Image (tube, rainbow, N blue to C red; front, side, top):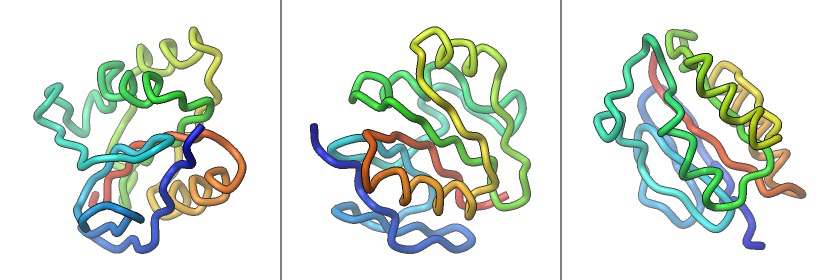
Length: 121
């Protein structure tokens, strides 16, 4: 299986990921990633990350998923999202964004990890 891309820079409103153009929010998974467009599924800070937001990560073979909460912990995660991941027996970590990036990069060295990263509030 292809490796998950490393995040090489994170700051307020800006992320840099190996092999991708710089951006603000990202969906990353084994073999690649793309910008995370919240309007795709109507995601907002509350109620937060939706099951549809993580399905793509599962479809690309993520066995562990890291969900960021934003730099100010404003991004929530819907209980249904955590239930979906539990149903697929996928380990999930929900962290402040800089902590999420550090954990994701560590996991990416050895694990098919996916993640959703929000670089502002």
